[in-house]
Image 1 (cartoon, one colour):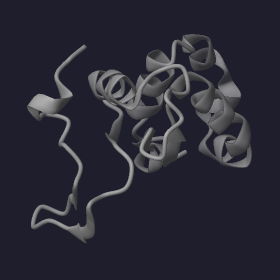
Image 2: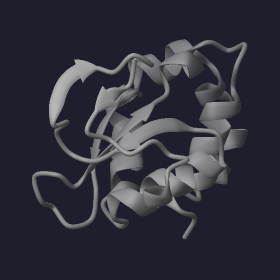
Image 3: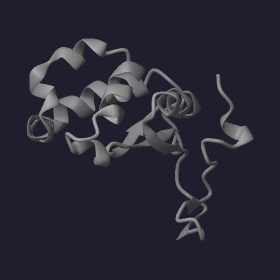
Length: 121
């Protein structure tokens, strides 16, 4: 379910990238659980079908719609702060100023989640 999700505001830079690709492994369910807790859908934690990565992959569109329904209610900074608190990786922003990665492998133009620009809400 890694992807770019639209956020409240609807502008060209009102998106958040949420990275759940590692979570497709059943060995590491913490990001999946963190996501569901963040978007206030703990009810889905007990859905045995969603515990299976194959099922989640086949029903990706439905899951993306659930996530998008939540992200559109919040601005990109709120989305990323709340996701980060629950262990979900991602970055907020629109398009990077330069698509070249920095020495640490991060895209330039985005504030790291631990920067002053991403203080807890």
